[in-house]
Length: 103
Image (cartoon, rainbow, N blue to C red; front, top):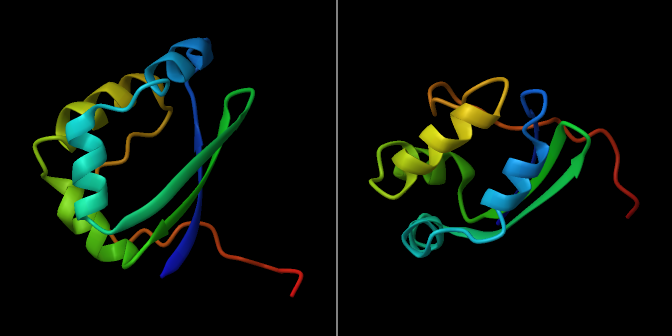
């Protein structure tokens, strides 16, 4: 299991819309994420800043699986309208580097 931290940022004024959209994740997207090996995905918001913690069997494999998945494409198009930087699933994103952890 991998735990990955991510940081994204909303476009100005899109906070309420982002919260509303995430009140209910589409069932087909939920199923696709679970099939891709996502064990949990948590998001915190502070103003326009979003902090994600993703637990997945294999984060890179999950991204490859979801990159062109029919349940993820419309979701990512919707997120692109809300986020400052669109995630196009290219490259080898590894999230935020961990600096310290209380053992």
